Image 1: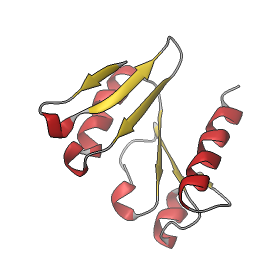
Image 2: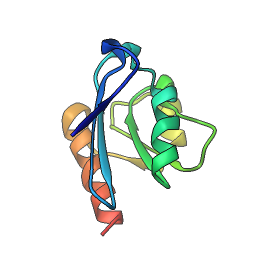
Image 3: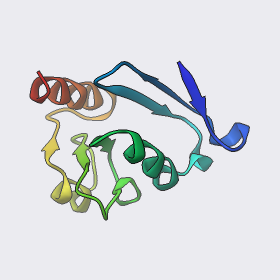
Image 4: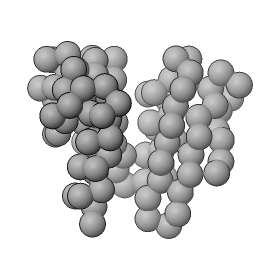
Length: 103
């Protein structure tokens, strides 16, 4: 497990093996767009699970967008996958979808 960030407010958890990684960001100040650039420097593609327009990490096709079912309609439109369920269950369904397409 590694943590990255410029300050305590930037910290997120990153764990990886040779083929994949998992990032959990908690603080609102963490800066999704800034952290995305760090991840894209290391990985060929990354996944974003979100529910609203600020979660749209637009500008790079290597960012694969997924939405939970309670997401704003405009966010769902740009996502490659929309979970059938809302909130945490929807996020789990998004993770299951990611695993299914990467096996």
